[in-house]
Each structure stands twice: as C-alpha cells, then as structure tokens.
Image (cartoon, rainbow over all chains, first blue to last red; front, side, top):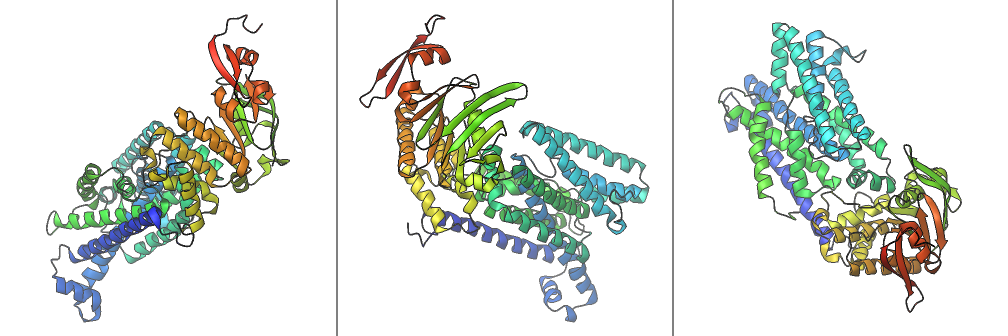
Length: 349
Length: 260
C-alpha cells in the first residue's frame, strides 16, 4: 500500500462504507423531520405547509402559528431529544462496558424525572440560585447523583455487568416510587402536569427550550468526540486502556457528567422516553461497530430518527389527536430493533 | 534501555504477591517463569506502572511512577494474561488502537501501513476485516501481540502470550519475539508456563517462587532438574539440544526426597 494513499485497501473501503451509513442516516433523519412537519391534527395540506415554511409573510396567521410555533419546534425537538438520548446511551454503554446500560435502564432518567417532579410538586430546588431553571436544574442534579452512584458501584464491583444493571434497576424503582409519592401528595393541577410529563411528550417544544437542548448538545458532543479514540480504546478493558496511557477514571467521570447533562436536559423537557438510549446505540453498533468516530454520530442520528418517527406515529395513531410520544417510541422502536437483530449478518460491517 | 525492579513488594489486600523482588531487564528476551501464584503477572504489572508497589520500578533510572502516562505507554507496552477482547471492532481496528498515542481523527497513511505490516508479519492479514470477537482464541492472541507492538515500544511485557496458541504458533511467536529483540532492539519480557519455550527463546530467565526470585541467569543456568523439583514439585530430566539450550522432559510429580 502506498504511504500517500491511506484510503486505499480494506480500511479505506470500511471507512467509506461507514460514511455512507452516516450519510444515509442523515438523509432518513431529514426525510422523517420533513414528514413530521407535514403531519398533524390540523389537517393542513402539503402546499399550505410548504407555503408557511418558505413564505411565512404571505401565509395566514393561524397557519403560520401552527407551522412555526408548533410543528417545526416539535419536529426539531424530536431530533434534538432523540439525538441526546442516543448519544447518552452510547456513551453510557461505552464507559460502563455494558450493552444493557442506558439512561433508562440505569435509573438516570427516573432520577431526572424525580428531580423534575420534586420541582413541579414541592417547588424544591436542590441547587440554590437557579429559581428560573428549577425543573431542569433539579433533573440535572438527580441525574448526576444517580450516575455517580451507578459509577461508584461499578468501580467497587469492578464493572460487574449484572451488579451494575441490578443496581440501576433498584435505583429505577427507588426514583419511580419517589415520583409516585410526589404524585400522591400533589394537587390536581400538579398531578396532571407530572403525569403528562411522565408519558413523555414533545408538545411543550418552544424555541427557547430548543436553544437550551441544542446548546447542551453543542457543548457535550464535541467534548465527547474529542475523546473518540480513547473511548474506543476503553472497550479493550481497563487494564489495556490504562496501559495505552489513558486515565480511565478521569475519562469515565468526565463522560459521565456529560451523559448526565444530556439525559437531564432530554428528560426535563420531554419526560421519560425510554428505549431510544438503549436501542439507538445497539443499531449503530450493528451498522458501524464501536469506532467512536462513527458510533457516536450514528447513535445520535438513529436516536433522532427513532424519536422523529415516533413523533409522526403519535400523530397518526389516532387522527385528530396527539398520542404521547413516549408510548409511540416503543411501538416504533421494538419492531425496528427486532428486525435489525434478526436480519443481522455476521461480519455485516 | 534498562528496566529495573528494585526491592518490589506488593500485596493484594492481606495477601503478599511480591516480596522484595529485584530484576534487571536489559536487551533481548527475558522469560519470567514460576508456578501459579508465584508473582509473574504482578511483577509485569509493577514494571509497567499499572500497579504501585513498594520499592521502585525504574526505566533508564527514572521511576516509572513519575513518568507521564502517555510517555510510559509509548515506551512500555504490556499485554495482560487471558486478554479476550469484547469490542465490536475489526481485527485491523483492534491492532490500530495500539497506536492510540498518535492517532488523529483521520487515520494517517503511516498508521495504516504500520498495522498492515504487523498483520502480515503475524500472518493474520486475511483476518483484517473480521470482527475481533469472531476469530479464534489463537488468532485474537496474535492480534493482541500485534497491537502491543503497534506503538513501537522500547519494552514489550507479555503475560503468557502463548497460552491460546497451538505448537506451531507458539514457536512462530517465540521466533518473532526473538526477531523483535534482535532487529528492532525491543526488550521483551515474557511470563511463561512452558519451560521449553523459555529454554529455547529466552536469553535470561527469572524463576519466581512464592513472590521471591528463586534464581536467575541463562536458560542453562536456571532450568535445572533441582530447580524444577524445588519450585514446581516435578521430577524432570534435562537434555541439551544442538544449540546447547536445555530441553526439559517432565517425568513425574516429585517425591518429597526428589530434591536430594
């Protein structure tokens, strides 16, 4: 092989194939987001939506409001929240060396939910001086706390998969019972807010919320991407990673904090949407392996795609009404995931 | 390059693993032998800075604990015992990770060439596109050694690298390690159970027993019937090949008076 042409040979072909997967996923995401904007209970025609998107000044105010205040923010919200959950799941599985790890299965989503519910029901802020951001701040603190507990157990037990998952499930139940308790003592209005939020919903999407989620993604993803090779090497096991010069503890802690941020921001704005953080990375792994340069973006793209499809399904299952997206996610995701697992060929990448 | 262990003491909790072990690794191939739980793996991990023992591990006179992790990683490569990769990576990518300290987002031609060359040298070039979890144990082991070499280290510490290999591959690995020590000037330290491999390929042998150095020297000096009876509790006959290297023929479990 010529030293000046690294793209030649098997590795070059592999890289090109993986880039094609990324490009393909990106196209699917765009198509799904477009479809998401085009569908909704208002029953607008294609031409009306297109006109409202590209010529908002010449559209009716109602039409403009539906498209620019509801549909586009909701569609974008699905992409960003899905991406955050996909990336969070991928990195949690990487740093804990466990394919069953995800923000949902390890109780991090439930912890964020508990923090958010605490703010909604009791108005209790665990971080002082953040009254305006009490719900997301509480969600973040509890998500981080839960992640640290899981991490501590993983460290003490030397990453035993079963122990980590069992502890995560225990924390999931603990925080779920905490939320149930808060629901029990909540007023009718607070209860309604918490229950609707627990279903998982994209309907609260606003441009400011979009900006917050996008900002967190814009901070977290480049930092994680900058550690791509180290995170890939972490899959060799702690001893080999350390021998490669990686400060394993520091890397894990840093990524865990970022994962908590991603989970917290997703959960506090969209509720507990399970499955995506678990399945997105699995599908990405099947398609491109665990080289984080491809695995990380594809996990995010598949997460975005799944939630976007779920958003469309939530509008189409009962025409004229919007079904909670958290429920639709599993309805969309399970068949998709099962088909991928069954259809997977050995050495498919 | 000289790697030294000076009075190394290490315990796992209350269980001592090394008791005042001193070794000096110069060039060539050094074999560390000894029965199970004699401290071979612990010694290798102390020498590469993965464990922090009492006493000192020195690389060219500098305490390895004071070296920055990336520098130590560049100079000393370690492959753990029973290393069984579980990552969803191709064999090529797996070996490529050995060059972690110099990988950029876009993999350079130098890195690609290095990995291709190693895959050819180890006879696993045709496995480059296979998933590392789907090749045989022996093939994965070869890939793991190739990965350890990919960073072009000064010292290569291998903990029982031939345990999953058939006889042919054991010999090929031994020849390769000798070649590495000869042509590239890499100091190879290899923990082994197979005394005949140590006899055939090592320049220096350290015999560990119960966390202490029992004896050290050339294979002919260390691999004696007395040592084998004393350390392993096995009666053995020692022959000598054409090259003057000892050949160990184990006979039976030694009786209590076998060492007399």
